[in-house]
Amino acid sequence: MLIKIKRRSDILPSEITPPDVYEARRRFLRLGAGGMMTAAGLAALWPAAARANAKLPNVTKGPFSTREELTPYESVTVYNNFYEFGTDKEDPARLAASLKPRPWQVAIDGEVAKPGVYDVDDLIRLHVLQERVYRLRCVEAWSMVIPWVGRPLSEVIKRFEPTSRAKYLRFETLLDPQQFPGQRRRVLDWPYVEGLRIDEALHPLTLLAVGLYGEVLPNQNGAPIRLVVPWKYGFKSIKSIVKISLTEQQPLTSWAKSGPNEYGFYANVNPQVDHPRWSQARERRIGDLFKRDTAMFNGYADEVARLYAGMDLKKFF
Image (tube, rainbow, N blue to C red; front, side):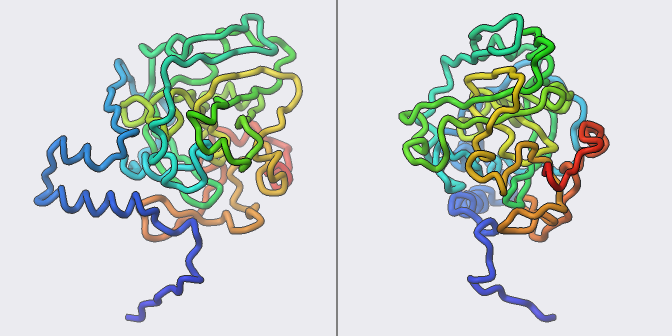
């Protein structure tokens, strides 16, 4: 059997296992001898910021969940894109203790009949949460399968009675360099801004998440409240939201402003449109050895393709 050994120059940055993940796996093997592990041993695997271990009450199984194998909690919480903490994948887990997710308020304004500023727990109404297992696909050609806990965004937005002029939703992340050390660098024009068309926002797949794996959302994963739009690239799923504005005009989003030829407003997973620096035709599921073909709309075409009927999805990628 011929075994091909890759040269260092052949390996893409996105294919390199971060040190935190590598070390956590080694600790897992050491602690898990014989297939048994104590609770204390399991807790030792996670960075301090991820060990809230607070179970969310009255979580029911929601619709639309994939039956694919879940990405291990270890990987979900130590391998993240969250530039407010830093640009390296391990930065969020390493630095996330600086974020204080309570008290937390979210402002709702713009084209709504009932604007206001709301406590995050009242906004999400924790006693009616759903768990939904969604794929999340990063523009860097890696993906995960995560059991998110939250509420459909449509249920939240309808409480504020959007007007007929509401065509888009604009989301904004907290701006606070003391809590987000990555904001001290001009990687992006802070605060982070994302947006959706209103029919995308009201689609039943679109989720406001406050947890994962049945527990309170860890800081590095977007605490205390984040967006999950499973058919789009991950950068659309804005974290640590403090403001939701309903607007008549399409908002200028952070990545579209930073690199308009690389990150379109729609950010739909379209494997036929390569990123200027790499192919999007194949992806690597975190934990897998081999790549797999990227599915149109991240595998949610049956649910969402009708939203884009008649659109040039190579232009509006």
